[in-house]
Structure formats: C-alpha cells, structure tokens
Length: 377
Image 1 (cartoon, rainbow, N blue to C red):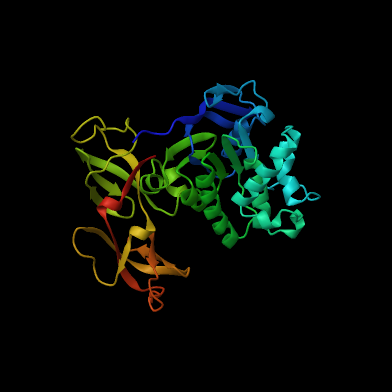
Image 2: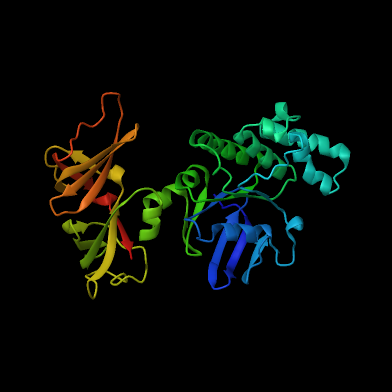
C-alpha cells in the first residue's frame, strides 16, 4: 500500500532567538490526513516549529512547503492552516455560535453560507445544543471543542494544536484525546499537535517526532518508537526504562558480548546499535576495539520470582527496596546484589493480585535477552 502524499514539507529549517538556537536544521515530511505529534521536553523547539508552520515566526534558514507551495512569502491569514491555542482564546462576550462564525465573517464569507457551515462544525464537535451559550456557561472540555470548531469551520488543510489539553484535568484530558482522534478521522485533514506528554502522543498520533535541543532525534509510529528507540534520550523520554552502561568486548555477526555495569557479562543475540558508524558495524567478527554503549529494558518486560528464574533468561538476585502501588500496576524496585537498582512493573490482574512483596525481601528478577535494547551513546 502506497503512502499518502506529503502535505507539509519542512526542509532544513532553523530558528534562533539571540544566542539561543530554538530549531536546528529540522527536516520533516507530514502526510495528508495524518495525525502527527511533535513531542519533547520544554524548550526543545517544538512550539517554535509549530509557530513557523502557522506563519507567526519566520525561519532564519530553510523552507516550509504546504501542498507544494513555499510559505516564505505567505502571511498567516493566507496559509491553509488554522491553529488551536493552549488557552483556547474563545471570546467571552460572544455566544458559541458567534465564536465559531467569527473567522468566516472576517473572511467575508456570504452570510447564507455561514449559518450552515457553523451548524455543521458544531455538530461535528457535538455542541449543537450549546450554540447560544456563552463560554463561561461551558465546561473546560466544551470550551476546547468551541476552539476546535472555530478552527475547523474554515476548512484548513492542516490543523495545528499547541498543547490543547494541558489545562484539563486527567480524566477529561483522556476523554478529549479520544475525541480528537475521532474528530480527525471524521474531518479527514492533517492534524499536527505539540505536546510534552508522551502518553498523549502515543495514544493519538500516527507518527511522532521526538525533539531535543532544537533537533529531531527520531520519527516513528508509536509502537516502533516505544519498542525500538534509537538513542538513550528517546529511550528515557518515551515511557520508563531501566538503563545500564555497557562495553562491547566482542562481536560475532550481530551477536554482542558485553560487560555491563552492575549486571556482569551478557551475550545478546541478534543485536546491534542503531548507528551505522558504530565500531565494528561494517561486518561480522569482533569490532576493532571495545566500545561503550547503553543497554535498556522496559520495566514491564521484567518478571519477579521468589526462586531462580528458568534457564534461557537474563536473571539476577536482589532485595526489594521499594514497592509503589498504582491501582492497575505495582512498581517493584530491587537493589541487586551488585548494588545496581532495577524496577519491574507488575500488573494487578485481579482484586487479590496485589503483590505481597516486602521491603528487604530477597527475590529474583529476569527478562528475555530479546527484550534488551542496545543503544549508542
């Protein structure tokens, strides 16, 4: 199946504010009808990149194309995009209907057309019954949907969302995540969302660009990004991870023999660092010299045993240092006999399944070698 055509093409874009480089040579293609997320910590450049798409900031270098047209000379109000801000920016003195109609009236849309388009937009976001209310009579989630309707009523090719759920409480945020996905499928246009919340990005986006210090570190689908991060930064930022420093002491094909801090000697079959220019990456046999890497394993891949684990698994002995109960899971923290700390997530699958592990109890932890990630530093 062929990929959808590219709607947004960001080509070697950079932006500086004084001595600070906010966006550093970013190149991205965003496809038609895609739900795309820009994910990263505060200050990584994701909002600046979104504002350049909207036309509120101008790149110092590089180009931005939408539907093949260079946006360099196109002002914000002429771009085929619309933006939903973190604060929603709805007009408090106007009804919901008038808020949604505002952009159409400014654009000179015939009055006979405005009514139908506003009604269609309100039906799309399930606010038809609230058309005559003022924003202060609505919940936070409803005000956010007013902002979405106001953006969608102008029929943009790309909808830009700047942390649109950050002001909502946890339960409403989860409901609105599902609502945004439903809405994106219904309208069939490209959504680009900026967020620092990994769970938000993983649950909504078709693809995610993880940003750090103005640069894109990895672009992938949610599952690929979670299970196969390409660096220590991405592995640590997406979900929780047990990270260990290691040294490759021999290599035979893709099999690596490692000396791992706190875990001792390990052999990982079918593994190789992501970077093509890693030492020894060109072919079989041991690398020319030992080199340093990181290995990682997700807490949910680790099993806890009261007896030594069966053969074929990486297994270590330790004592419980902490147990944290989170309802659906319990996080068990072990201090291994080597002094290394490791965490495991245990699912609470029944009302009686809450782990009875005690602080100080001696246990074994284990995981499958194939669940171990190898990461270049």
